[in-house]
Length: 154
Image (cartoon, rainbow, N blue to C red; front, side, top):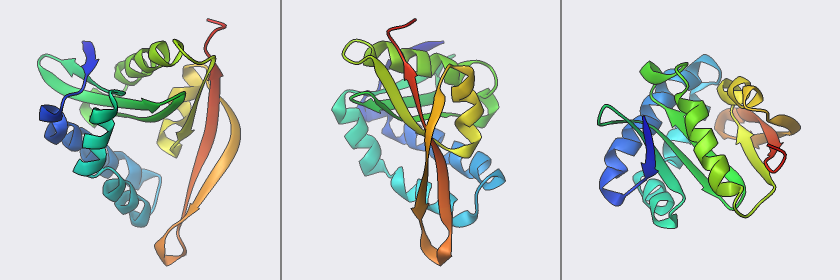
């Protein structure tokens, strides 16, 4: 398992990781409008912007991209792992790599956790500091946890 910087040539594989995870996991927690919102949000253009920022990486396992992570300043903006590789430490490994980068310039990492990811982040030492809500179409609400973790204490 190796976490490396994402390149533009990986955009299609990253898109596959994101959309496979979203379409497989999110319907268990959220209505279809939320699934559609996340799929639209994680467009190829958005992925290319993340790659261009230099803050997006991929987790490679046996020459396959099985996960991805991204951050902006001290905000972890996304961690996704293919469903068949979940519950094997991949997400925790990506988070650890993101925290290492964030800790170079910040004392705290923050993130907006989807309902399926809250337990993963709690396991990694994150604490809920607030709750967010986003109004979507058809009067559907996307709810999420705002979480943070002190990094310098480790």
